[in-house]
Structure formats: structure tokens, C-alpha cells
Length: 150
Length: 197
Ligand code: SF4
Ligand code: FES
Ligand code: FES
Image 1 (tube, each protein chain N blue to C red):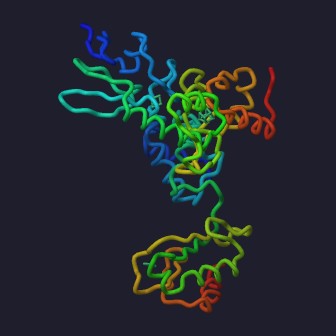
Image 2: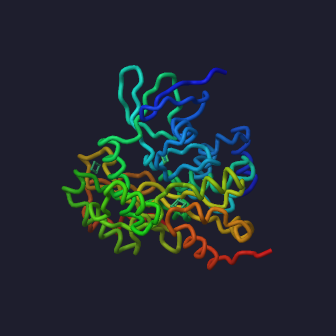
């Protein structure tokens, strides 16, 4: 993420020290993760000690301190999807892309997350890739779905 | 400003506005056990070992004395069956994390706490925050941070800052009730090397 954009975000909040969470959220949203240099920069610019910035950045699940893949794959493991076999789907996804939930492939193509109910239980089991729901799937469908995301 | 009168363990105690119950007790020689409290640091209220019973306007409450401000006619008890029990459970929980902490073992003797009650889960650090807060508040170096949350919460030296500041300071070492801080220090040192200037 370039420095100018970070400055813009910080200026949006008038560089106030208490805006650190908002600033980090905006950066996370655009960049998908928070590199160390960015945290240092936010710390310097807002006058908030790096230890505080790290405390916040590691406390909330929203923030990622590791690079994220170009595509986020989210396997629903909520109760309904679980009943309908989401464990098998997750297994299949893991086999295909070679990572576990919370990890990112070395080529930065995919990040994998699992999580509870996505709010469309009748469509389960389902996976969501980059916000796009793929519903009512079987493990055999997974490969074809993931192929669309380069 | 006029003094505030309160009673601690049946003894009349004079305190100034803004003092905590712990301050007031200490100033009149009454002992309340503490773990995360340090006179040079802002009250934190992390460990709750200092819990006492307060009676104010007809109500009895259990509060952390290191945070609770004195008030007029407050009646404080620093030991009772219930307080001892609260402290005992807290000590047992802390011992599950730091089974060899001398401070905890000392208190365990007093309160009959046994570390076997909860499964041992040595993380060694009890998250009292003394090191983090001392570095931030007194030394203003912010070389140690709390990271992560929930059961994964821990303290970390920030290598960039620690490598410059810590070698010549180490003032936090004696504050730690466990040996975790020094272990973390050595680990960080192993990673980045510390400057001895
Ligand atoms: S390392 Fe020691 S002083 Fe620091 S938070 Fe943990 S127990 Fe407290
Ligand atoms: S459990 Fe998967 S959408 Fe509700
Ligand atoms: S000493 Fe009061 S909460 Fe720790």
C-alpha cells in the first residue's frame, strides 16, 4: 500500500490518536492486511506507541497481520451446514488448495476461512468466495468452483 | 479539602479524596494482598487479589480495593470467610498458569490454595501487565506490548524498540511475579540481539 494513500486515510480522521481503530480498519479493508511498516507509520503519524497499535491490531479478529490471498474462500461450518456435510466440503477445499483455515497459499491465490452460519441455511452447505455464495454444493463441485478464481 | 473518614477492619482511617481503599489501608498500616498493583503505576485492577468487602449505604459489595475510591463512612473489611475464598480461587487459577511463582506460592500458603484444583496450563505469564505498564508509564519506552486476545493473550517485546532500550534498563525484571518476562527477554535478544551501549 503506498504511503500517500495511508496519509489520506490518516488525514480523513484529522490524525487524532483515538482514531487508530478506524484508520486500521480502513487500511485493512483496502489492503486486506496490515504490514509491519504500515503499523509503524500509523504509530508515528498518530503519536500512538507501536505497542498500543500492535495491541489493537492483534486483539480484533478483523485485522490480519499476514498477507491475504487474492480470493477469500469461506466455508460455512454453522450448525445447518454442518448437518448437511460441510466437514466434507471443507476437507475437499483444504485438499485442493493445500491450506488450513486461517492460512494463505504461498502464491497468494487463496485465503481460507471457516466460520459459523452465513445466514442462508436453506442454501447449505455452502462456500462463499469473494462474497459470492455457492450454495447447495457437494464436495465434487468444489474444484469447478475454485477454478474460476485465478 | 476535608479528610474522608472511613472504617477499615474496625479501625477509623483518615483518607484524602481521590485515594483508593488500598491507598487508605496502606497509609494506616493495614495490609491488603496485591499482585498487579504498583505504587508508581496507574491502578489496573487486573488480578483482583486485592478484593475486599465494602459496605456503603446499606449494601455489601466485593470490589478491587486498588481501584475503589474512598468515600465517606465506608466500612471496609479486608478479611472474611468469603474474601478468603475469593482470593483462594484466584490464586489457584493463577497458579495453574505460573505454578512456581514465589509470590503466588507465598499467598497460596496464607489462603490454603492448592494448584491441583485446576488443570495446569503453564503459560508462565499471569498477564498482570506490570512489565507492559511500567515500560509505558514510567520509562515511556513502550518496548513491551500485550498482543492477541482471550486464551492466546501474551506479552511481547517489540524487537525494534527493545533492541535499543532494554539492555541498559531491565527495570521491569524484578516486577514480574513469574520468570516469564526474563524468558521473553532472552528470546527476543536471541532473535535480534540487544545493543549494549
Ligand atoms: S511477563 Fe511477568 S510482569 Fe509481564 S505481564 Fe506477564 S507476569 Fe506480569
Ligand atoms: S449454517 Fe451455513 S448458512 Fe447457516
Ligand atoms: S492488585 Fe488490585 S486488582 Fe490486582
